[in-house]
Image (cartoon, rainbow, N blue to C red; front, side):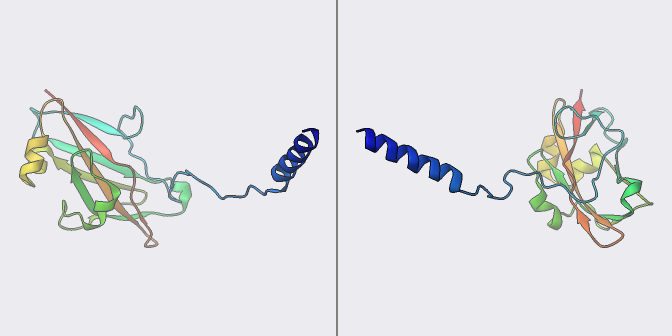
Amino acid sequence: MKNIFLILSLCMAVAFTSCKSDYGTFYEDNRPEVPVTFPGTTTYGFNPYITKSIKDSTTALEFTLSIPESSGRTIKEITKVSAGSTSINAGGVATATYISAPIAATGTMAKFTTSLSQFKSKSAANRALVVAGGEIAFMFLVTLDNGATIIPVQVRVRITA
């Protein structure tokens, strides 16, 4: 019995010290080289948002997209916009049709402007989303001056009464 315990202890020591634990990186955030932020929005948790009254359906919903000046890059355009419920994701942005033509940018900033009434006009599903207490979401495909593309985090509009 004493020998079995000694052999098991020796095997365990060899097993723990002989294994190299270089397994790579797991569960790492997928961060772009050039981050995109949304000045003027509020963030509690993950997704930046703005608040809009359902009564103001024709006034502008505006998101400013910004990259750091220190990045050495500029934004060429907002190439695509995906819009809908908060379940939209990056997978659908490349084929999105919310805008008919890219939106040109100036330097390190770009502005996307729409309205609740314009959002509702895009589909029956969008019309159903515009309710007091609801949320709608937008995602963007941003093209930089060097041709690189970035899909930043989803931004939302919280709709109040």
